[in-house]
Amino acid sequence: MKYISSRNKENLVSWSEAMVEGIAQDGGLFVPQEFPQIKNLADMVNMDYKEIAHEIIGAYFPSIEEADLGSIIDRAYDDKFSRKDIAPLEEVGDVHILELFHGPTLAFKDMALSILPHLLKKAMEIEGIEEELVILTATSGDTGKAALEGFADMDRIKIIVFYPRDGVSEIQKRQMISQEGKNTFVIGIEGNFDDAQGGVKDIFRDRDLGGEMQGAGYRLSSANSINIGRLVPQIVYYFHAYLSLLREKKLESGQKINIVVPTGNFGNILAAYYGKKMGLPVNKLICASNENNVLYDFINTGLYDRRRELKLTSSPSMDILVSSNLERLLYHISGQDHEYVRKKMEDLNTKGYYKVEELEMDDFYAGYSTEKEVEKSIGEVFDHEYYLMDPHTAVAYNVYRKYRDETGDKTLTVIASTASPYKFGRAVAAGLGLDTGDLDEFQILSHLEGRTRLAIPKAIGELGQKPILHKTICTKGEMKSKLMKILQVGDKDD
Ligand SMILES: *Cc1c(COP(=O)(O)O)cnc(C)c1O
Image 1: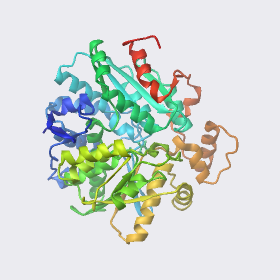
Image 2: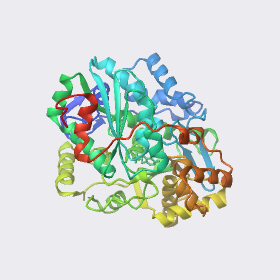
Image 3: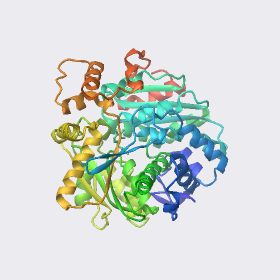
Image 4: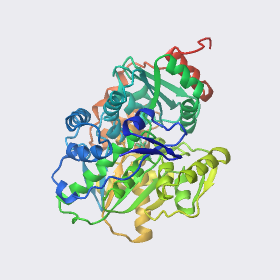
């Protein structure tokens, strides 16, 4: 099982190298050379989350010894999760909602970021890495906190998070800037998520900086979904959902399901695609965007065009114009054509768009939801089903309604729910028609709790009392110098 850069067929590495590197030297993303096949799905029906994780993760990262992998999985999916079944599936009207937000930071990023640090440690051990690892992370709100939580106080690792200062929810920001742990650093960017992600990519591409860092005993890596160590653990919950439907006899063995995913960087839905490639019976992968509907245009027309203004929406974790993981999909659907991918990514970089005419994208359906539709869906689902959705989940729910109206397809459908509604109180309250006037975020949450009788999760209730520990703000251009200052590398006269 080798990994290869999406842009260069000579660049072939082991999983541990791929994980430690994060992104390939040539700027490409590491992809598995082949998809491991899960042939005995019906035999896995009584497995719990950890056992399924063992099968899937073990297939992608084969050189971890059984016992080591077992203990890594045990440490990742322990009582940090408020549910024993880790990712419960709730029947809500005519859909099943896969709740991926019961981890410590209340968003789906915990599903992978609670295990990534342990996998990365193992990869460093296998690769014999002596340097201290510096994890650079750009976040649209949820990755940052989940990565901080996952890496806090791990030795020989520093974690630095860049978030768009005005592009995250109040709760998301509070979660990050109150982070404890002496190896954690959190910096606000005067810009949007694409600026933060672009800045991080520039730092990775900076060879001189890389040299200086190495000289000082540091090595850069990434906790963004460009890291293969993020992607693989996300495949697990799609199998888990399918198997629990089988167990409850809502499906027959081999029967297909639709999967709807609220999409930003294309990581979560790509994991579902990988699942399908491994033998998970999937009919349509439904890609749901908010008003930043670049992926909707791409899947429907073949034109990927980032030349537009990024809109700030009520689903900030999807306010993205450059969906990094789409590069991996391009690689797979172009028949592993490295040259083709390299050319398209170069177009995106230099011209701001690329066009694919010849590729088959029938696995996917794409739709998007407007801000009005999101608000309406939150209210309707609560009124009719007594189920409270966060705005990201509502984007997906609304796109599914459109799909169903358009196609009449009655295939059993699973919607990925990516965050707790309490992370986005203001938008959720608006959906329920509550008057939040000049209430602060925490007062809004109390109102929501009163109205819905759903308890505020402990991790959010406590936030108001936590001291703010991280106050640094900078521009995209200053990211590199901030990094060097934190690490005390190079010219410190800035
Ligand atoms: C990150 C995130 C998404 C988007 O997931 P991608 O893997 O980037 O497509 C959707 N919803 C929430 C709540 C998120 O945190």
